[in-house]
Image 1 (spheres, rainbow, N blue to C red):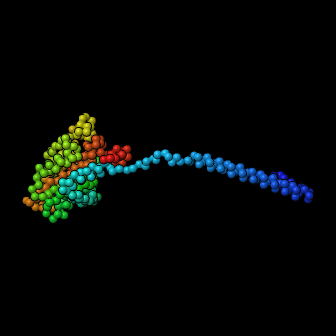
Image 2: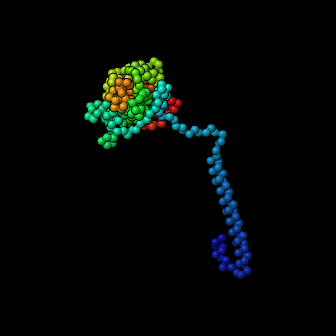
Image 3: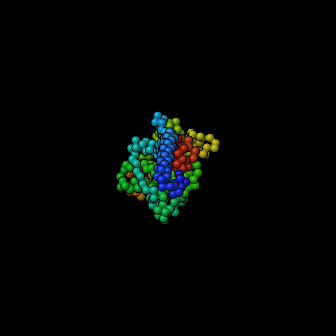
Length: 306
Ligand code: FA5
């Protein structure tokens, strides 16, 4: 077409309009055909695309992954519910604590050798991340202004400079319990702990109380549960002993009562502090405490219905 149009100038006056018209007709014809082919191809591409993206609305839907309660949260709620049923209420306290509440009001004066038991994360000279939930004993007693009964449990995070291993974590949970009233005895503590152990682990679980030492309780005990999950050699949870320690407890030391405004001649009480990770490990046969804190959904999803 370009050649023809270029050659128009060489034509005679008579030939020019005839050839010109003819050329126009031919050009229009070709353009029309191209347009037609283009539409045809576009339609074919669209058809191909539509058939590729076709949705079969009759296919069953794909389920989106749904989260669940963390096992540790479920265990804590279960323990809370049990103690609420026994007349305890829930108290919560600060994770950033003063030296006074974390140690001194618990009968651990500065330079007391028992402070070495809990290597601490200090933020300044007098402020630290609490090493246990026991400061809530002093805080709660003070809030009651010397008058019982006081009956609380306090779940929360605590921090220690422990080296992480299968049963130790530098950050873990504790549930503190405190019951102060007239005539509270060690046998009451034993009764409550037995109810707790049988509720959580089953009626046939064995518990043992070992004499122990805590500066804020006298006498002090530690409670072990029989390690029914593995028990044998090579077991991380009970280190092959057949027992695992899950809590410390005792009768509230008279000094602690006195420092928080309670008269030890009138009032007595028990306190305990348990580790819910250890409880969950034992109950569900979890061999490493670090599973709780690595948030691997393959681990978490195993306990969806807990
Ligand atoms: C205490 O912390 C005391 N405050 C408990 C207490 C409260 C005694 C009231 C008397 C009266 P202990 O350091 O033993 O005690 O810790 C208590 C529980 O926390 C242990 O039995 C264990 O279950 C858990 N625990 C301790 N250290 C760790 C750790 N590094 N990782 C995971 N759990 C731990």
